[in-house]
Length: 206
Length: 283
Image 1 (cartoon, each protein chain N blue to C red):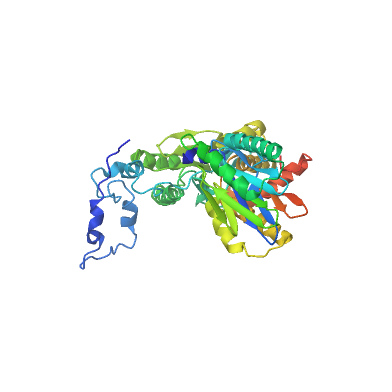
Image 2 (image 1 turned 90 degrees about the vertical axis):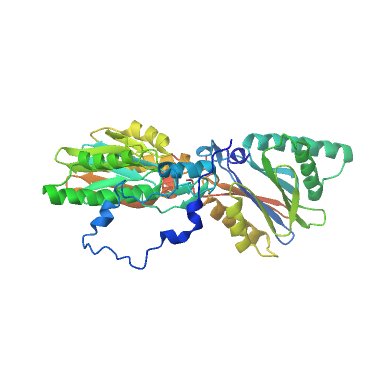
């Protein structure tokens, strides 16, 4: 089980701020643990205009699950003619993962979004769908232990979007510098009520 | 898959390891006891039923998870050319997927004219190469002549052969310039010893070979050779997850060795080489 979760390598972190939320991921595509194939694999996917899902773990399951999520979102919008809230998206992912309890998806997703009252929401799952919400930050991927340490030190409540961006970037870059399987660049999305700011990070390429 | 657990009962009474009240430390000023303690007959072994396979048994039985996971993952390379030998290494120590350090010294300066590199277990490599230093000095004192690279590498290979199968983990290269000119030997933990012109050892060696083999010619100038070594290490650190940190390049010549590049950040090299090709560097 753990071998498959480390086959590709990833680092995802999501943090809350004051009326804003951010999610950051590395962009390494590795195979057989140590070989690097490319430096621009997408691990964060936009599901609504105020919510992102980050998927860590086996790359093939990340791609399939992101496509499945996209399909379920569109079906929901067609049937119910309303936007899905981040908490709902979390519950939906939780059920999708538990559906495969005895033949699971090898991913550990992370949800980061703003609900209709502009309140930030982040949550993370294990690979069979246990949802755990947090008030401050969530991490996922092969670098999760390093990220826990660095986020615990740098997160503080009430950050605005610029401070959130800075904190997220520094936490991600410091965390992946201690992991062989993640890094090689990064991408950060900060979601505010007015806009979504996406920036690419220049990290260590070793 | 059940594996017989290793008998750890010797740990229950720690007093058997303590020195008795009447123990006297060796008064020998030459510390020969220290040197003799490196011989297999005198090297302290674990007091278990099968001391020789203790390390491998512990690893298999899973009783001490992570204890026997030595810091491996590296790229080291060396090649002979008209101006001597270039040795280039990275500086990352990785334990599985965790990066232990980005500033490790993987070239051991055995003496003023012999260099050794370490790949694999850092403790094994650095201890036995420092021991090799002592053996080389003893040879000099006895024979009134510098030891040849062939003999030095043979000494190291013989040591590894004696401990073969006991769990040492070390892939080294011994390089030097003696009466026969520049020589490069690759010695590994099973006692293999090969003389050659181009070697690369470590998890990133395949990536380094690609660049090294493309650019290698015997008649390179010293600057071109240093650049080739540096570039090969950079490419290996970019592709291999377990290599990284800084690139170090040494040059072995007739008068000994020189540290040409003490430590150049491979991240800086990445963007430098990308700029040369008019790329941004995030492809």
